[in-house]
Image (tube, rainbow, N blue to C red; front, top):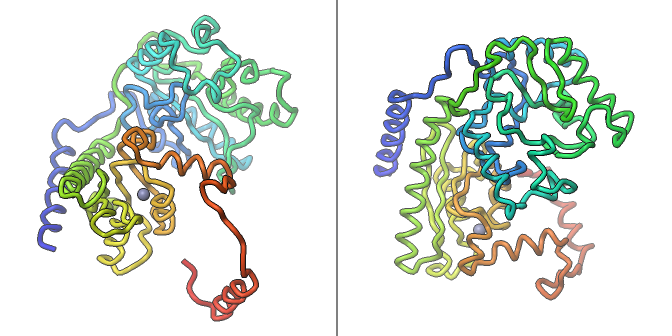
Length: 392
Ligand SMILES: [Zn+2]
């Protein structure tokens, strides 16, 4: 117990240090959109791996949306118009540093890398993406007054159907295309009308892309990273969780206790609650994965099966069992190190199990699943329901 408090102290100190020395600051004239429009939803795709490149883009250090103050204020006007009609806005990208555009260009030159072709440019030859204008050598986004966005319904937060996804390179994404339904066109027009009324100009080739007409820096391109002080100190927390998980995994791996997998569970303030590692070999327990061990230990320590609000770090992308255990524990945020294919490359079967599940769990040569005794078992369920016992 004493050691745990030491750990907490170190984390707090780390957070204080990273928060005070060289803290990230926005340049004069720029703001975080969430500070101006509290209802805005963010899905910053270039921070995630789900974009046309298939990996996080250089310069995206935090999933935040940054704009010039003028652009954010105008966007607020659009958001208010849309709010009255039952929509929130959802931003995919806003200010984009020059170094991110350079990443796009380098990717564009590597014609071998077509990992995301099916999702984002199935009908366009990759060698044509620049010539056809889908990617530019310089982006208006780097001037800070351009935003990529869509609408979500206020009640369900579900995306409105615009006929094609964000960053889909093809004529179906153009304004005025006849490849979409009248309803989808009407949806695009709801967004366009509000944006135009607020002072933005649409881009004919991309229904999601808008530029502030009176942009404050019409000729200036910026290169500061997309980042925030909160995420900067958050990365200090992640570095600590990573270091402790790897150290624990390495130790138990060398002692032949289990595979090279570690995990940590920590709270929103960055206090590490537990660090665990894989102990399948020592415990003769095929379920003793690092994440399951961490969840079990955290539950015992905190005296609850409900780990709502806690965050899981795992050195490898959790296997289906661990992902399910995480959801059972009500953990809603997972951060991982290595990918399933990395585990498969050294002989572990994570990817094999994922393929079986994604294939509909129908291959009986892998697992024969039969139904038997339903009546008796449903009777048992009924008894539980009638006793109004706790559902978790
Ligand atoms: Zn697992």
